[in-house]
Amino acid sequence: MTKKDFATMRQTLSISRRDLVALAACSALFSRPAFAGEAEAVAALLAERWQQRYAGKPGGLTFLALTPKGDVFATTLDAVTATSHFRGASTTKTFTAAAIMLLDQRGLLKIDDVLTATMPGKSEPYLPDTPGFAIPNKDRITIRQLLGHRAGVFDLANQEIPADKPVPYAGKRYVDWQVEQDAHHSFTKPELIGVVAATQVVNGEPGAAYHYSDTHYTILGEIVERVSGMPLDQFKAAELLKPNGLADTHFVTDGHESTLPPPAIAAFSLEQGKTAAADDYNYSYDPGSGNVFTTPKDLSRWIRQLVRGEAGVSKEQVARMCDVAADSHYGLGISRKAAGSFDLGFGHNGGAPGFLTDLAYNPDNDMGYVLVSSLIDFDDLGSELGWLDETAAAALQLIAKG
Image (cartoon, helix red, strand yellow):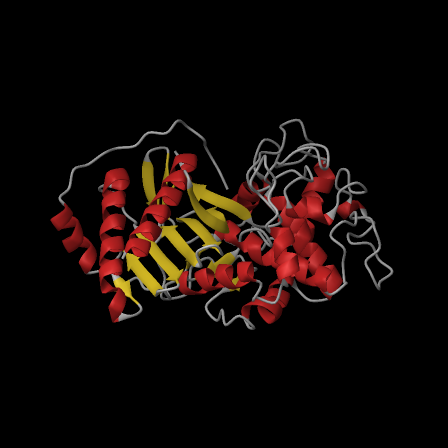
């Protein structure tokens, strides 16, 4: 997800509360008239936060909270609604992890099996015994380690292949190099896993430490396909999207599907001090890890139903997913999120050109949310992530007080 990690630098701007309310009023929407006050207050908060950090830059904030009082929606953007599409990026991992846990629940795989073990009820291992799948430490990596980012697998989406490797993409990120060859190249899971096998790149020993890697979830996606006998996107559509009423969500596999379906939120990226539109982007590069097109309505509903144990994955399995590690606050496809002392609950972040997404549901107060910035700041991504958490916490507290 990340491209750079520089020191935090924020700009401040004075703007009157009355002007903020006027600015926000045109774009604040709410699901029920009883929550007009909360929606207006949240919209004003979003406008103020945006002005403080990104005054004069394109993009904005869109927020949807699902609460015991009802749904509260607010945005700083004209014509954006709860059913406007955006790239959910690594929130995809919650779906892939749910697919794995569902198969484990049904006895079709075991998350503590190593990748060379035979799949239950089959005669084949989880990954084929062929050169294209001969990733380092394959016989010692478990499915659980992949889920928790503890398998040590190299991250093809975010790391450069070492320059000394005898491959044409040495010294570059493989996905970037491939798009340079063909802007609409459709990435496949065997292709990406094959790059790790061919180069023997590695981030560490299995189980030794937490190291986030999109390629972990590429491998998990391949396992879902081999165990279920269905393409990953079709399995998730049949088992997770359709049963949960997520009609406006799907997973991109075709490199030519580079623009969001309408209605869509306009997307922007900030990198090296320059802002550029990011509406056209090959989104097939992260199968299983970060290729979801979704909406605030669908994504907030998904995380609430998943964490409640109402999305098809049992409460027992969800408890395993939410058992987070102390050194990472990451469980099995789900992380524990907080803003200071404010507990946001369980969810996932997601970053891709044009969007940074903050997603969580807290079962203790029955409040879930999705917060989307349509400007991703690659120059200061870590700070932007923290800023989104703080903004979400402030919005949820406004709603609770109302």
